[in-house]
Length: 425
Image (cartoon, rainbow, N blue to C red; front, top):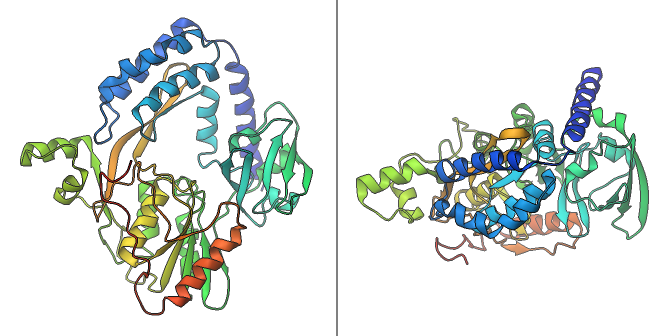
């Protein structure tokens, strides 16, 4: 605990210094240097199938006036990101120096052992670690944080308030009651882990996974699956799981699918170039490229003791990237049923690049196509059983277990395996 508290003090001091250092106005020279670096990355390093990134100067020109008039990092980033959104793809955005530092400190957007879903009204709590500070404070799944120090939080990082010793949260409970909670800074030293395995009944287990990012604990996941193997029915809760690292996804899938079972293909710029050189084929035909490529994506390692019971996966619009790949793989290869709402449709492998003056850009380097030829980018997964967003969190779990038990020994009775490439709007 002392070590955790010391780590927190260092992180808190870093955030304070970052906040002070980058509260100053940006000069034209600084903006020009950042834009030059952004242009180099967008035109020469970023990649997504069918996207003409050489149109960046054209997109930039549409927003040049707003960029020129921006004097703060936040205003500058907002204007540049509007230009980047002209490409119509995910995983490409500029970040302020403060946001970049916060990402490095807290990559999973996990604050005090809680994961959130962003709503127009605030931040909805989607999972709370039982021993976390927020749980002890009285926060529970389904609660909606509508204010943090008098302002509506737009992202979990907004709860890392650096100007105050205490954070006053206004919380709308699932009952409709609005309460105020006082969060003190020292409480942030606690572990944020919220990955859990619980039993809904004697046959049905629920595994909640909040992220595939750097906080994904392989040892813990292995322990959870040792317990999960005792179940006949397994519900995997990927709601508001924004994705993470591909190798962590491969590790996770090794507990659920046969060893080395191919579930899709990562398609990089070089893969497309080789495909065109060797076949003279269409560089935009992702399904054909995925079929042609011998480098398949799937579970890593030989785990013959993978789970062989029935599986359901919970998704919502906060389920993105690696979590969408996971849900799709389990539906295709394990006849899993999907329950909840449409996923994000944001599935591009990306990296982060550091820029001048502390700025940072996230940009895609690979596309992805499933083994069935479905491109998930821009093509959200549709649940087999839909559950309203406003429904209590437990409703999706109940519906998933009910359907798994009703299916008997039959394969996935819904049979909804997504749309072929090109069918998405």
